[in-house]
Image 1 (cartoon, one colour):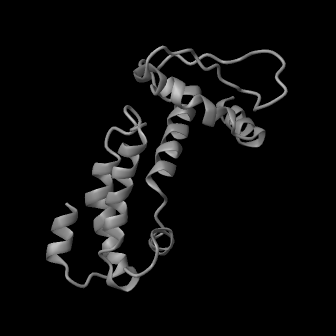
Image 2: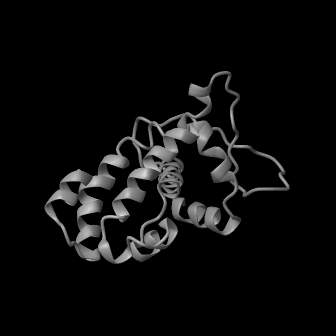
Length: 158
C-alpha cells in the first residue's frame, strides 16, 4: 500500500498523505493488534520502520528526524497506539461492554500501598506465548494508571 501511494503521488501534501496513510497503511499495521502484539524487539522495529519510511514520502519533511516527522504529521508511535488500544480493551472488559466473550481478569483485593484501587493480578506464565497474552500483557500498564483515571472508570460503571 505504501508503494502505491509513493508511485502515484510524486508531490503529496501533508494533509493528503495523512488521509491516505491512515486509511490504507495504518489499518494494516493495526490489524489484530489487541489479539497478537509483536513482543520481540525486532518485530516491533520492523513495524516502526514502515511508519518511518512512510513519513519520508512527504517532500517538505523528508529531511527531519523521525520523531519530528511524527510530530508534524501528528502520529503517535505504533507502540504507544498498541498500549493505548490495550487500555481501551481493558476498560471495555471491566465495564462490561462485551456481553459473552470476555477473558478472565482477576482483581487484587485488600490493602495495597502502590498502584490504583482497581489493581489487577498478573498470573504466572511458563512460556512466552502465554506471557504476552492480553490478560498478562496489559496488567503492568493498567496497574500503573493513576487513581483519578481508575476512579473515573469506577463512577462510569456505577
